[in-house]
Image (cartoon, rainbow, N blue to C red; front, side, top):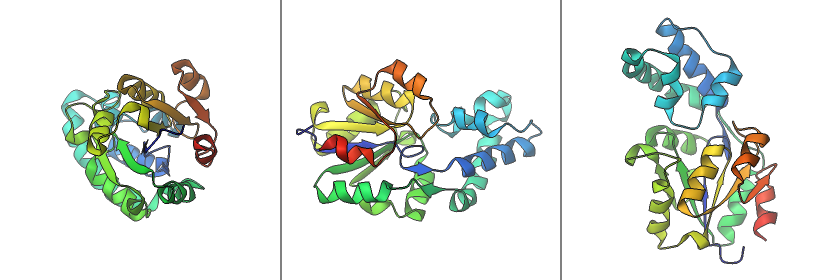
Length: 213
């Protein structure tokens, strides 16, 4: 992968484990609005499409706006207690930055909460650019988010790889013409990931350095 100059990362499930915070905020919201709580697995499987898409299937349409308000208010505090960086992630980012790769984040998590999460976990300093889907017309799996990042650096798909954890990430990369590496630490099963045929599947984020070399 000698031509690669830009590495774009998804956030949740790839670099960061914030599932505990998401589950707490989700079930708090359901409880406040009189809806049944959901299991950790069901919530985890719904992550990755943005907070509106996370909540929408579990409540009436008329309650979505209020639910989002409740969820986001609770989530500001929940993120500070219920999130962590995956083992080796910071070491990998330091090594890639030292090797002069351009590093970016492409996430469906809203900008406000991406900033809170990355600052709290000490990740902001590693990245040249962070782009979230709430400032775009369409989120992932639409390729706009990756195309905007490549334009930012004046680089093309052959000079870029995208690192994610879900089938939605493979779909996004494919539509942008970018090779996608999937880390099997997120919401999608290996079987689901293999069906989408990413460029590579790796077990842990630390395997990325070896793949690039």
